[in-house]
Amino acid sequence: MNLRTLSVVVLLFIATPCSGAISPYESVKSATDDLLAKLNELRPAYDTDQGHFFSEIDKALAPFVDFEGFSRGVMAKFYRRATPDQRTAFAERFRELLIQT
Image: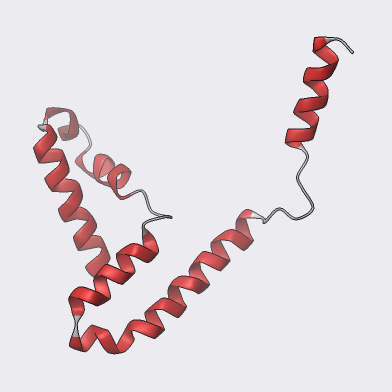
């Protein structure tokens, strides 16, 4: 088997979806269902311990939301002009405000 044939076989194997693969729709639905379950579980903490409530929501969203990328987009042309400390401070505050709204 030459290199070209082997490359085609490997590409076909990689590109062929596995029967056990989760579709993007199922992935988003699962993440949304998990977040809603977490919100319902933490609902009592919202009135008694908001710090804990928002911390848990942050943990639940972190694997799925690119907060740093969002903050770069919001800053737009000002991102390049900002110092690294300003970028970090903005990203942290932006994340905090998004989670609390």
